[in-house]
Image 1 (tube, rainbow, N blue to C red):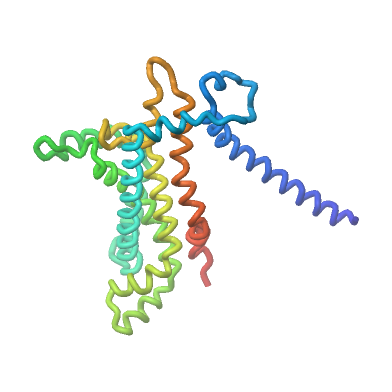
Image 2 (tube, helix red, strand yellow; image 1 turned 180 degrees about the vertical axis):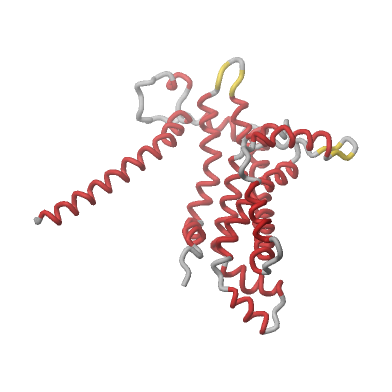
Length: 284
């Protein structure tokens, strides 16, 4: 074996070793979360037992059979899915109008949209609470502790990100396609439906996925703008901490359950993620 091939093999081994180490570091918290969720209260105090060989089913069965937890889970599914659908539709329409029609001041509008993501979410918590409890009021009804309230709040933060993501994707489509369709007699709506949407499908998929995950994982506004009826699964985790102690096993089990929908989502449409993130990255 020559010195060149030896260095090449050594570099390959080092690369694989580095990736293995990074994979272990990434998966270790997930494994430890599962290990905690699979242990009884007695086993949790066995700090020397790193390898999990048992499974304590009540940690999963009790939350799943609890009507309160079921309501939290349904709320999360409804809020995240509705928000992702609304954000995807609005992002496509807004980006198509601002990017393809070349409206006056469109660049300033794009910049203004992204400024909504610059401030920390905590800065909006108190103003949003006052809006929901005092301003958006019809008689005794307010938007506080409602699913529609959470959906609209998440749109405020997810829509700018979605618009900028769709802008990069839509800018990668040659404008000549629009012009050719217009010459054939298509109006702007037909161009959007027949030309733009099929070409931006991978990007639209990644926009929907990321918006869904952001809404599913959000905690701050779900905790401050809800109390009982619209609570989500992320806020439900705090319910396992009380003055009498913390149900670590059930909390970890609920956390594992909360990660499953997003994980399943990503497994089935992971190819669209790669396509969407690289769409328009290279232009002729």
